[in-house]
Image 1 (spheres, rainbow, N blue to C red):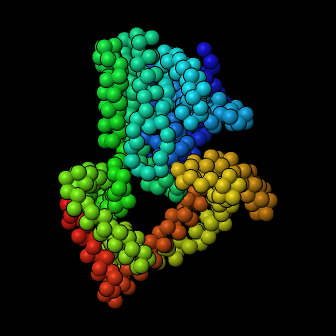
Image 2 (image 1 turned 90 degrees about the vertical axis):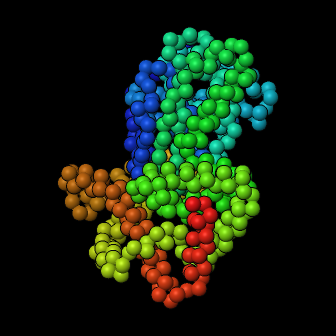
Image 3 (image 1 turned 180 degrees about the vertical axis):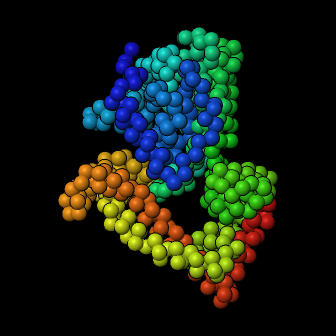
Length: 448
């Protein structure tokens, strides 16, 4: 048996560093259903897949300590010898697809046998059941490889307890931007042993049955904008009507509540698409009109949720931003290069064109560039200001929080200016604004 399951010191250090950084990449790191992960059982984590490496790191961040999660990834990334060493260290195995050539599909047998042995040791696998990545927030058809491995492991090792498939829904506040939220929604385990008797009689039907079960679970755990024709319409309405549905469901205004509200909106939209074609066509037209009006006004959807704010609230917020401007300037100066270099490398060196890889590439590059820049800047600061060791230590660890503050300050300032612009439009009784509010209200009424 290969050493891929060994939890070495080097792997532990790297994994802990990556997970530590990952949790701080997002403004809110939220895990739901942690109690659904069993200990001391063979498990297969099965997350939805929209954000490249970030999806795999999300699974590592919830896995039990000292249990490595061995992932399967597309085989073509193993062609580079340098990448091969890194992938082996990261405990990733190749999965061959039709596009890799019919002659290579047979190699999956050896890989799948290895996965069966991994589960036999009560270790964990991570398999993206959709088989590929899509940047749209929708669940794609599940492939059969994950179930083939699960049934084979259950048969070979005859576990007293079942191989457990753990559905994991991952929701990102934004696929690219730093400092948004991530929700990792862990579902109840699917017990493979529950299907074994039926599998022995009819493998094809039973495989389809468990596939439908996993697909249904992932649908409940993630945001599945399940429409081909009206995907953009669904996307706009889940944002536009989010606050209204939080109120309708009588939920507190939290990130999790807004996620639940978006799921309810999608369910309503799917029902409308199936049962009322004329209504969904009308909603689609209204969404196009609403988007055009927002662009014309240079406003974002969230600004319409600020009606409760008074002039004094705006004045107080403006004073706060002015008073904290010096801290923004310091945070910007100390963090401009660390934050901009990963983006520059992604754009101009790697030249990635696929949005679904952007944050993953920037995150991985930042794991190297951030500590390097922070160390260099710390030594420079001490050289110019003081050579006391504790000042070096304090300055090093203050740089990242100052950068995070600078980004939040900038975001708040942009929102503040948008709110001022909105208030001016209200005071002028802008025709376009009134029309935008009217269209917005029509959309909300049609799905309420």
